[in-house]
Length: 347
Image (cartoon, rainbow, N blue to C red; front, side, top):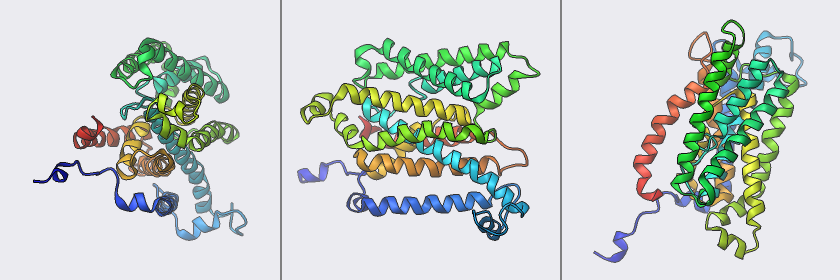
């Protein structure tokens, strides 16, 4: 056999995606549009396409048809699900690029458990949603800082040490959250905390949702704008500095942006696991490691994935299933398959 026959096939770089990235993104956008249309029509109460059209602003039937009202209610949570799915996916991909480890995510690093603990404390104290969002952000920041402090300088190098300490810190904040639930009034605060931490888009106050959505959109846009720099830092900080990238500023930007996205997502929908870990790894198989294509693809695929999960959560029965349960049931086995399939590629 010739030497070329022993080369590892480039499974993660489909020729079509490499040569037609714009068309690939356009295709994902069409899939997202179809997913939104299907989610608007799907639920315990099915609605007709005419009701979907009548719910658009400017329609003569807007606000009069009960079906149009249902579509309007669904549109808010579909937008929220797409926003959170896109944000968590972009944040997960950025963290994996920063630490050069495909197993890193905001949940693995303890950010999500920390944000959940902060939100649980705020709910226990009876605070309003804006304060809950602030507590979630502070909890996520505290968890990440603790993880990085324990991992030390080797953490940024993408070593297994970072993941291990992230798991430890996540377990610590989950234990603290359990303590908060133990102290909560079983007839009052405890159900709110439990339902919140399971993850759901059923408790979105319209007056605060715009503020929370900005906390996902703005840092997500910043990460997308810096995607070429993230591609360079995956090759090593020395290489990135050699071409003019201010690595310390970039690391700070990624850490703050991803923590803000994860914390705001917890404030919007509670703890939704696996999205930031699963979606980037699936998308990377299609696009390869180039973040100029990977990050926008993750945003679109993350939105599609979480909209589908939320639609399934509110359509499986007459009572709504927390979407966090759906994403965990899907994410765990899929990630196991990916690990078994791509173990040689990750090494």
